[in-house]
Amino acid sequence: MNLIELTKLNIGKKEKQEVENALYEMDNTIVTLGIALGNNGIDIAFEKIQNKCNFVFKYLKNIADIPNIEEPKKVVYVPSADPQVPRELIGIFEEYKASFIFQNGSIWYSIETNIEYSTVR
Image 1 (tube, rainbow, N blue to C red):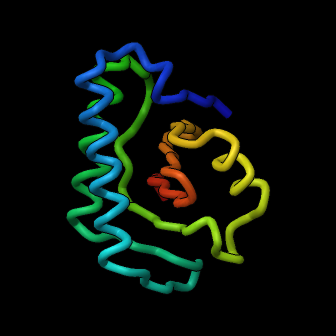
Image 2: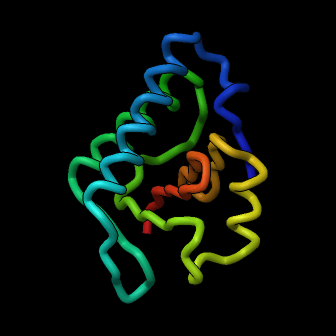
């Protein structure tokens, strides 16, 4: 697993703020829209969230020069309190708050106690 923390990305203060703002807006959007229960737990793919996710993805790929990352095709929201979330995954996000984890063409990030991840399925 390749962990890239936002604070360690080689981008300027303004760029970091823009990414942080996009993540904050996306997180608030998801909370406002609520939760949609699907067969595989909680699954949300609203267009507004997807657009924000793609913005962050492109920004990190272009500015931080992170190679071999594909844009996510779907957005999934899992609150850390959800019993369906593996405890080890929650532990990772609790340990590395406001971090980005890139794995298998996916981007995962956490804002405080909310877990947000986008992945190609």
